[in-house]
Image 1 (cartoon, rainbow, N blue to C red):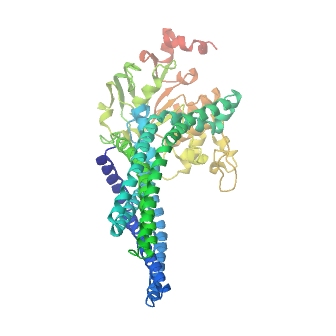
Image 2 (image 1 turned 120 degrees about the horizontal axis):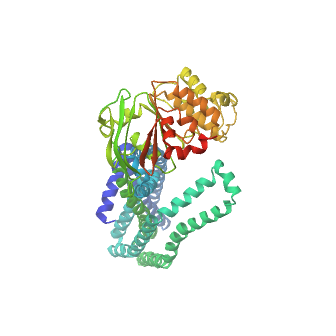
Image 3 (image 1 turned 90 degrees about the vertical axis):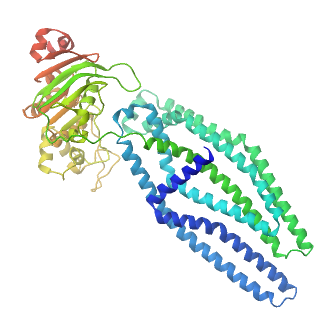
Length: 594
């Protein structure tokens, strides 16, 4: 970063902090000045006390009163400093909370508002990793800025105080701190380059750590004997990141030592000078204490300034990643509002390929879904079925072609109002392990207060009532052994089939006019699935789109669409497709002859 870029970054940090906690900014800046100036003032009066005591010792009767006066002033300055530190500590904690809350809220909201394709984009994920690193430590960045101001003022005040004693002492001190500043900046630049170049290493390590600590994965990890391998891989990745960073420190040890020696020599020269001045009676005896303290504070101020500046230099560089991430466009929420489910949903010559690739996942797919119709989409894995659902729900936009809702292009419709018409249950359903069983169902529609009648009906339709009745606190039971309810009952882990029933109940509770089911009952036995779908298909006013490999489910559909390699190859009723003995018949032949 150039000096101009650094200054712009500092101003940006100050603005964000001021917006979140304006009073705290003023207190921090005032504290920076007070923390830098007050010790030097205290040192001055302490030096005056020493001089007065020496004068009193040799017979100056008026010097004793001056000594007492200086002692009282020094003590009052100490009390003032202590009181201010306590106030500043409280304000700092308050500022950190408010800034951290504001930053995390912004990050979460922006990340969850991106266009869906960006979650598959490596550049976006890398940028998010770096931006989130900055956001996590942002509350401390302004603290460091205040620390930099404090150390800088300490340095300048110390140099000015030295110049008042002798101008060349100030020059020596300035020359002495320059090597340390240069070396620290070189080190910080190397560390920033290392951090940005090892994003994937840290991400892989974090993913391994996450998997190792998930109870649901431990069984497979042990059975396959991979625990030790992953632990070793984690350590290897950690060393790649951390050891290399420490190596930078090792390379600069001798350079830092040289800079420290220069500063030590400067301090010795200053002290020898004042000693000779006192011996020659051209300076009062208290001047030794004054010069010693001021030189020490000036050099420590320079060291602290460099240290703080190098650490924040790295953070400020990450600020640009944060700003770039926050500049990513979010999904458009403006458009035509849908108040009811469209009468027709037409997929018109849809083709699609994922970002950063040229291979079409869908090719020229066209069909129409009518309101109240029950359709099934079938095909081998990789045929494009789930991708088609992502387009139908508006998560992705077609590369070519259009999805028309009563003739209106989906891209011109407020996607939130479209989602309000949908209930979507995918094979990778979301398990809210932090919530109770009842809350897992209620999360199907949080736009209204919990409706117990709707919840009870949803439980029955999903055939999950027996599961919930066996839980220690029924609907109030947590569905994770890592949680404990108000009755001091441990949470309970559910099986895959039980979780699918709970997720189905959430879908039934949503009670949306259109339901999209993508392999939602793969862990439920065939008889239970048949009963559950009987509940679904009994409602002739509800539009249902089903993806399934079970013949007992899809044969009930009004229309079945058969896909192969991203293309629609057959369509018709179950009976029509069986008679045709084409791709559909071939795929389900083994189930047809059971």
